Image 1 (spheres, rainbow, N blue to C red):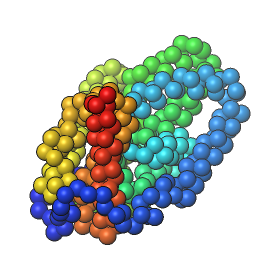
Image 2: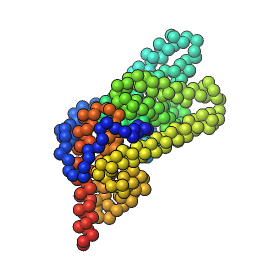
Image 3: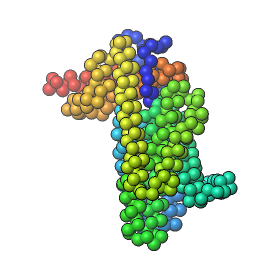
Image 4: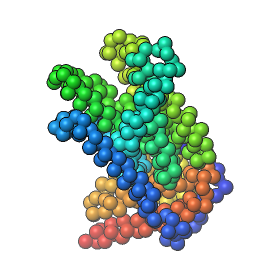
Length: 396
């Protein structure tokens, strides 16, 4: 979601007291996930099922189950972190599932199929470069980041109404990276288990990949997602493909540095970890915190415009645009059984703020104006439900 908010607009919020609005473009707004989005999820799921069958035949059913359970641990860490990032304006669960399935299935299959061909081409072009550098340092970052990034590109167009800026890009891309890391971890754990290294090698690989650096692939692909999100926030989908190519640069470069650090720059893992890997992770975390604060400011700014037009009170803007206000509101609604209604009210108001931002930026104005009308109707209806229930409970 964009980090800046314009203070003047050529299309002010609808003026007047908050009355239920007749929704415009109702069939477009309420059509649900859509056939294309459902098909994307189904296809990605089928690819992952096929890949699981292949891994089972390669590693053996028992090894696949054990390695899969181990891989769930770093995956859980990554997903928990991404859900924390996504708390302010949660993305649709279907889109997040597609992102995970793309990363865990389609991008892995693409890497397995194309990796050897790209390695051959790089070996011919860089004949003097050692093979242990070409594979992990050059081929893997190039092929893997392109394969993962294409999934994020699909989400830009298939989930345009929920892809507002860099935070959304980070969440979607991070989920793709988490899915890829999940399957890759199974492959690495399986190789350690069946190649004669025994339990000691398996534990070593698990600790290094699963506990010391679970966010590696998430960080690489998130760099691309952030660049795509910034492009969407500033110019809609006009420059998406140039932004995609630009975003691949930090994603591939970060991956190359991560993979090549011990081959080119360092000889001790812990020195490399504490001097390079950990600072990179902390820098990424600081950037995400700053972007989340920008989301909150944007919400407050845009809802403030609606408050000036009479759609919200100043107290409601404070409630909707602060973490503490939301927590208090949800606790208040829970006391009389309207927790879900309040959660929907907060979600709709937040979507309204970001829809207004797209209108201000001039992105798909006609379509977003229809969505704005529907969201205004939704927040009005939900407010009425909440206040009616609160009043009836007060008289009991």
